[in-house]
Image 1 (cartoon, helix red, strand yellow):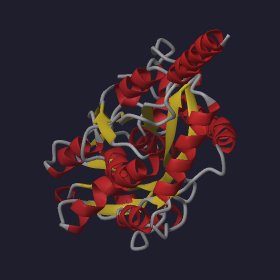
Image 2 (cartoon, helix red, strand yellow):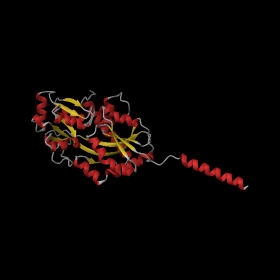
Image 3 (cartoon, helix red, strand yellow):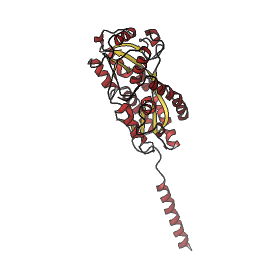
Image 4 (cartoon, one colour):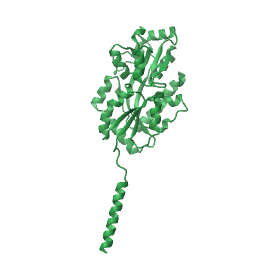
Length: 324
């Protein structure tokens, strides 16, 4: 009898041990990949690298920033959308890959529904800047120059469907100015082209434009919001600059592949919130004209995207923006 009881106890112990081994390890237990759709040196890259150390501490795992530029950030979005829904491949995205590119290209390889919103992380205005050699010193002067010689001025952007592209499209829609679009694979490349006078105008992101403006290599004219922005207090808003009907700002947010377990989404949301609220992260972003802006929950971010998406899609249609 004792032998039978001993055998039963051993068998039970083996089964219990096997059950423990079969349980998945708690999330997160290995490095996390943070994918961004633009080249190093641009605004998205700056945001990702500014928060990555604090995010890594909050996650308890290394966080690797992975730049996958191209197609207005669609390459990165497509990669993450098709990655395992396990919380180890994340996306920092702007309206470009979530709303604009699907509206521009019906044949794109992913749908916005393939990506699950976690939280908005930042908002900021764009900055309208020109090469100093143009001699343009104000928004009315830019409009006049673009109308006097249509398509002579080239404007650079971080890609088709990017926020700078849409910023310029709204500008031409409202003013009737005609300029030629020259897309690049990232914000830093677009800004470099203006500094080299290969292009003359850009609606760049604050982290890309402001350091170069301080060095005198760019002439900044205004921010893209109607009123002055506390993030860039020395620049006029569009109303003050002479174009009161113009108003545009953009955001970056955190996304995961659809189907990611709710508990994992919750962990990522909480870790992102902790990271973005660190004083060092806030201060670093603010110096470059970017504001931390967190959603109250993943559901709150999802609801925001519904109305925000309508704005960007309407702009694409009204400005007749197309993939070039």
